[in-house]
Image (tube, rainbow, N blue to C red; front, side, top):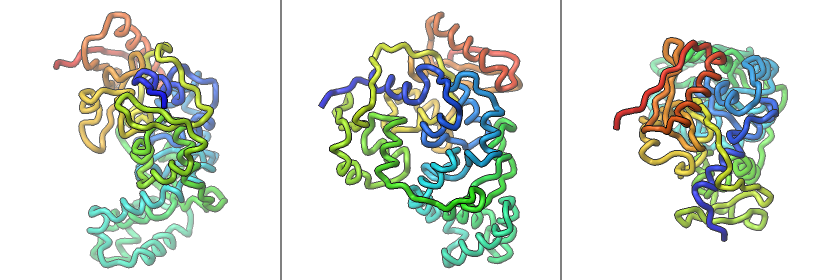
Length: 362
């Protein structure tokens, strides 16, 4: 097996994520390429696509949501993602065990203990039969059906156990750091087509096209699925095999291209929860362990970041119209200027007016 350096793995990831050069492809194709785009907050996917697509506008993604060609729902790791509608129909059933596992966690069982799961799901779907329903209304109706129970938690469990999609307004460009009032609809009703499960091997292939080369553990961390070793072993003949810098076995698509380690990588500003940072168990190909602690200060938080020469070198935030850049250490003047120039290019897109820069203290 060929041993791949961290630099080669970095350039492969950036290339497949459209971060080495902005693409002329449209957002529908790019979202499909990425499999799904993390969408915990409505604005962040827009920023992620801006960093990847030449000339991307808010209206392009908003229209895809309104036209039901892209949907927002729980997907990978039980978190909110945007996905192409047909991909969602195929991938949500494959990932359903992950969402079911989350629904069995203590947070949900404290409200549903002693209830019949199938009956709870049937009650929730009956409420939703009338069409698009505000999540708060689903919670209210479930609280009425199950007195003494927390309806909000019961509604969350129904959303995990059934393929529901959010109304377009939920995923559209909105306020920073806030969630729009969520409305939900059964996916088969919203899309007018049934779920059509893909094979787990198909999910692995899609993952490698967007994140490879990678280990089995990487695929599991990205998807939330477990016990994928046997699936990957069955695919052995079609995959290319490598070793990572630490000797870990990595697999990749047989026809995948690996850019040279010295391929230029431009500065990029990434949104919170960006795919590129969350696609592996071993994230050292894009971020050092010390900086990872800065970017992911809590299990549920992943700060927006910027890349210099393909690696995370700082974080940023939008405050009162100012993009505030914080480098994790001193940067050469050339790189510092490039980061600020990229931030100035982002300003009109996010409605900002100014850029500030500082280096964090050790």
